[in-house]
Image (tube, rainbow, N blue to C red; front, side):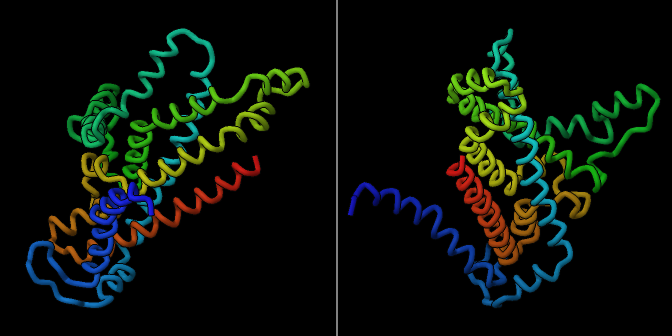
Length: 282
């Protein structure tokens, strides 16, 4: 046995494996999060979770945050990377501007956009009313606020996707493009047959990271809507937070946490396995 693995195994056991197993145990109890005692209630929390219609709304929101952010971050991030990989003026400055939101706390970023979109006194509504239109309650609209949160999350972490794609693009030899140009291949054909296949490792990294971060999105939601109105913009992570700290329902919160864990593992592993196979084919 390599003893160098021992510190890693200990750290994983203390900070990952034990908390996970303890969370599974708590999900079968009615613990309030503070009491020294907890009563075993079996599958009651899971039955409650799967029979509550709000659960499916929360799961749908979570999937929108995760999959929606992944699609937007990768699409726009790849576009930025392609543009900023070319020789142009102020390229370094533009890259810095695109990446800059990443260094801001997600909670602070959420509050910045809250002050833009809020109904009373929001800068966007101030501009709208200046032109004689009625103010829009965007954060209070259940059909809009989930997508606004997805947009803000995309805007903030777009720079990470761009940097990873830039690294991938700069690792592709220019000889491929020169040969393709000599063969008469168009720009689209070069992108489809050279750039995209050779970028699949970068796509894999970006997709998996974006999925995991989007599916457990928390800070931006809390800052912008606090999950409201009602359950309209709740994610599994924000619902867990409210159940534990506001309603003292730690057992049910743990059950939701286990559901979120399964969703993240299934979706992320599926994407990882599929894209890894594409890497081999490419």
